[in-house]
Length: 280
Image (cartoon, rainbow, N blue to C red; front, side, top):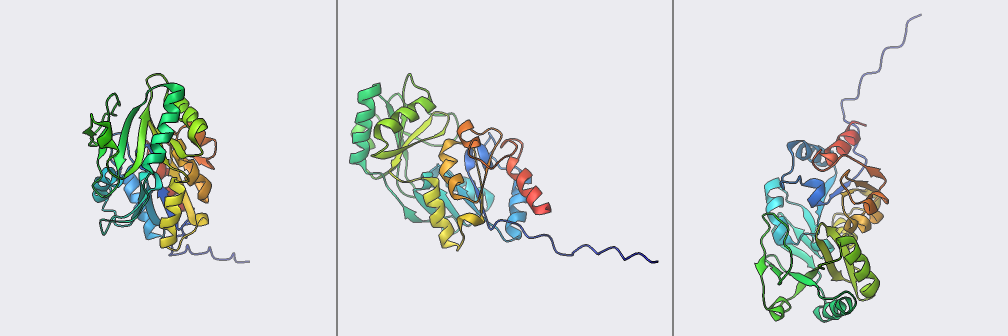
């Protein structure tokens, strides 16, 4: 009795299970030196070759994101400014931009300071070339991102803003975000986006609102999406996406809502997951 011949392997690779790969930048796609490894670049290229779109979704405004996208040769849509901006990298233009109501933000800050004392402030101006203005006492993170020192509080509020950054001399990031949210959560949104980075945003704005707009332009849905992140500001994106993957270095609040935890950004966690999906 002859045995049946072994089946020939298919000449076609298995289909990639997601049509959209959404990646945060800092602590996720980027390593600590602000570079993207070749392995991660190759994995993203393979996913896009298999039919998925890649969208960068970052808290950084466009001026702090553009050089990274250019280095990647990225020509698609990017969601910047915590969801405030949808940017077409290939055409170097803003498709949408949401600004913070400065009067409402001022009221929110006054309420917070009445409870916890003076805050140090910085502000991100709207637009393709919007500067980040840093006020007296604000501790700037080490790194290459440009800021402009601003000793005149009136100047900080003189042009449209995407967001305001706040710091407190005695409260850590989590405590400051928690207190601020409890005091002014009905006026503005408050997010903790990274070490030393607590932000005041327009009410209802999040990475998920910007990502949903960008996805709609591509004819894609939440269920089509796998999202990667590391900080609490990624929680709305995970709630929106079909599958949320936290990095090993992620904040515990994000890990608590993730469907999966991968390796750290330094250990190419995005590539680890994409390679597994591509080989499945």
